[in-house]
Image 1: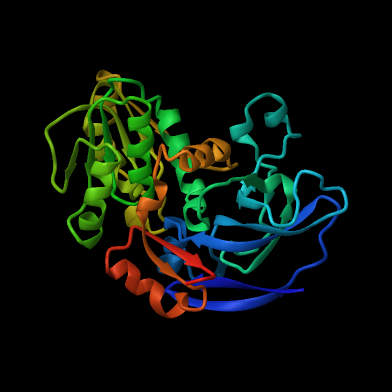
Image 2 (image 1 turned 180 degrees about the vertical axis):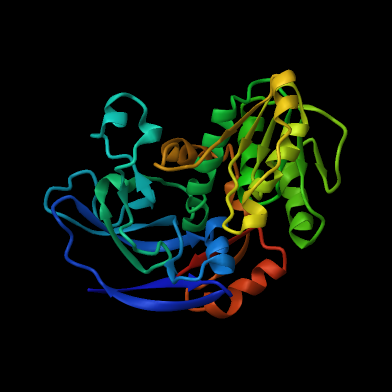
Length: 329
């Protein structure tokens, strides 16, 4: 069969291409994509990457067909799809260090922003009771869960979050759920900051600022360009830890200046987090399905895949937090 998918490159140039999909193998599942979120990484591709690349990895849909050996999935079942699934067989997986797996199952070059995907059944996670656009937020929430857990946010500890995008807001929501103390979100003034302000407050941020602060925090989380890593470390009190989850491809945004001597004397730490292989999807799905985290609140714009090449860039000019591509828009 033929499947359509969205590809993009620098200059917000996008095109929909057709590709041939084989029949499902014994352990494969054919997923009909019902919603796919546009990630910050997709935006980096569209702003900075010269080569054409598949777009989308925040995927929710329903199973359309399965291979002969698949027993867990049936056509019609709702599922979110991981973009990189740990293999379970490499040295790291067998040593219990699954976060270091480098042999995981992938989308094999397929854009998540497609009408159909053919994937290994192990890449799918079930969900129920929520619409497909909200289910597509399982992936960014899982990213936020990993960030907050790795930072070891704990009850009563203060947290500064640099950024007002989807990951920053979901980090605030999950940290609040864990009982974090004072949470402050710091962002740049503008249309997205204005859109994020009520969401951040609803998610539990005690204060949302668009200016520097003299306050010091137990932890700082950079869900923004990594060039802000030094600023995050400066906001730490003695013994604090900063985590960087943001990425960039341009030289000015991907490098940071650090006062390492101050870090040594003040016993500060700097760590990073990347959500590959995917972990935390079941928990994220449960938190959204139960209503404990209303992840759908971060969705500000919805487009069809056909409208994305013409309208997606303007969504971000309007201050979009999260754009979801849906088949029924």
